[in-house]
Length: 487
Ligand SMILES: C[S@@+](CC[C@H](N)C(=O)[O-])C[C@H]1O[C@@H](n2cnc3c(N)ncnc32)[C@H](O)[C@@H]1O
Ligand code: SF4
Image (cartoon, rainbow, N blue to C red; front, side, top):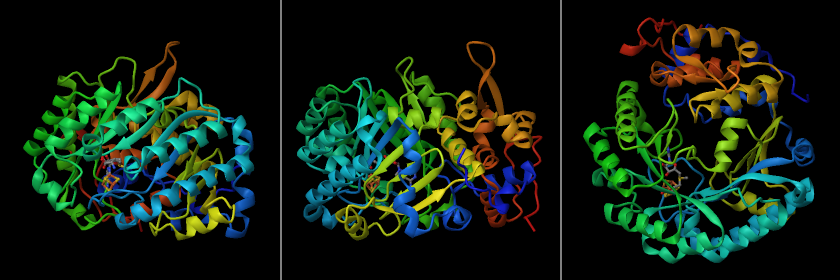
């Protein structure tokens, strides 16, 4: 295997109890968005800029199945809580066509560099931003280019995102998506609390938009309809969250996804300190109870609840990433790509501007900003962090990807989560364990559990940020949560 040499900082071993406590203390950042502080923690793996163009395609040679993500960085307005790569809304009209021209050129560049026509897509998400801000013609151009440049089997559901406002006001666009072969649609409701919506400057959601949008999406023919809601806002009350959940359940989507607010890099970042772990855990618990009572199902720790039997509810793209650790190619401004041994970021993620991305695409370059050649430890941490979208690690997929078992790779950490009742093994059809899954106590200690599997440099970063935390989570009694800050 072509792993990078492990940096000494990633070889460090830490006491699992201390890392667990640091993850709880830093609960706003210890999540699936991995790595943390990559400019420092991933520095040893960064490929020099001069070598990026020639190195990036190499690992793709071995890969014949991949997920595809295309990023559309446009929104009518930027919500105060949003962390995604979105350009200045004033630029939409002048840049939309140009942006899609660039995307098509980027697809052509990858087709040339990787020979993508022989590669099969296992999932395809069009995300953002708000891709439905774009004209139907531009989405059609994009789909044509993807179908021409990759193998896209019929059974793979293409997924797209919209806001309630757009779906409500442009039902013909929803029908157009269905006619183009898009089969899953995701809509962000977030909250129906008018004060909160106003505070974060979000005009894309209102009860009347949500109702009209759900109707337009159903009428268009969609059977895989997801609604996102958010919790973990400062001053968000349990009764306010309950009202949002009642409304969303009334909309009767097939899936409901709960997003816990991530504050880093948002306009409301300073509010993070006003939200305690106890509050977010109580909110998550309320949401889970209401969704289960309404006939939606998710295993412990999973964010997406589905009411369709045998359907996990996430897009095929995300499901393949989470369960199988499948490689994915990200196209467009700031998009992320992962192969077996490399992690790459397209230009534009940090500055949220198109200039650099555009210049690279126009010069027929792959529009990459940073490329990391991963060590085994960094790659394992990345895969496991993403697995926690489903609250569990798929053991055969882990072994197949890395050539060793999870317990061999993380003996102390696996012993800790089992011993403390935070995770447990789930047997497969043959009776052998097929997954290591969060228990309900583990769900409450989610941020601590996930940190246990981070690479050494990232654990160290969390320990340094953490200031002698003492957390008391009643159902986690028995866990040694008191710790001293790292020296
Ligand atoms: C890329 S957005 C697309 C949805 C669409 N633009 C909308 O807002 O309706 C996907 C989802 O990410 C979630 N999200 C956005 N910012 C977030 C943050 N800071 N923390 C957690 N979830 C967030 C929201 O639930 C949103 O619906
Ligand atoms: S939440 Fe959706 S609409 Fe709001 S800025 Fe983010 S991507 Fe755009």
